[in-house]
Amino acid sequence: MPTPNLKLDHIIIRSGQPEETLAELAERGRMPIHAPVQSVGGLLSGIVRAGPIDIEVVALGDPPAEPVGYGLGFVAPEGFEATVQALRSAGIATSPAPWVRAGGRRWRAAQIHGLLADPFPAPTSTRELGAVDRIGEVIGGVLVRIPPFSRAATRKAGSSMVVLTEYGFDVEAERALAAPGPAVAAVRVGTAGFGEAWERLRLSGVQLHLDDLESGLKEVVLVGRGEDFAIGDVAFTWRTSDQIKS
Image (tube, rainbow, N blue to C red; front, top):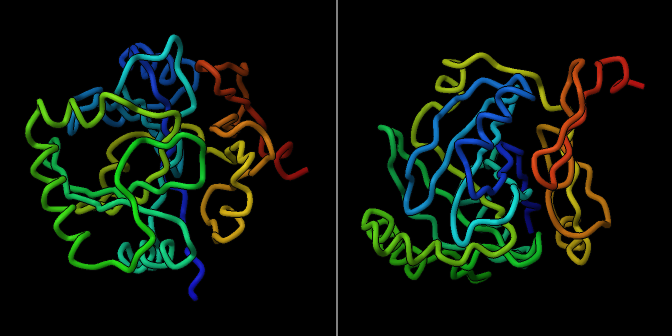
């Protein structure tokens, strides 16, 4: 059985005021805005660039009282469908992945359940990829293009989101249009109750610190000098290169 290989691509913060949260990240974290807040498939999404990864701010479901560390986005170095199948073979459920478009870009994302608590409610399965998934992808692709249906689909957000994304455009070229901002050296994630599932994965890219803490995104370590800050319940900590090496 192949071991799923996931590379960290972005982290996700959920906010009831995404424009304000995105602006605060840009100012306090010195992160250039890569994509302003816009409507994407029934939710609002904006992105800042943080070195090798993006930080996405989303608004969906009932707005939280303050921003929350909502989740993680991965890409598949060994191919999207092969990785989805490897996840399912490892007993980790994934959803169909309809293609969506926004701002002239095209991508798809499979929801991954069983890694964080109370995930975004989506139909998932551990069965072998097949015709049912193809039908789900087609239907999902139609639904996200019809605003009333997409709003209904995102009315309940759950407490977390972990996705595997495939880009239908040159994402690195797009990111290069913005300044890189400070690099992210590490991301700390609470995995209480889900540690055994994480042990089935190979993780690459930015280092993930998996701690037996309450499930969720906890801390982002930035490379450089600055004043530590928090966005809701997510801590942003500055460390110099020397401090990280030691």
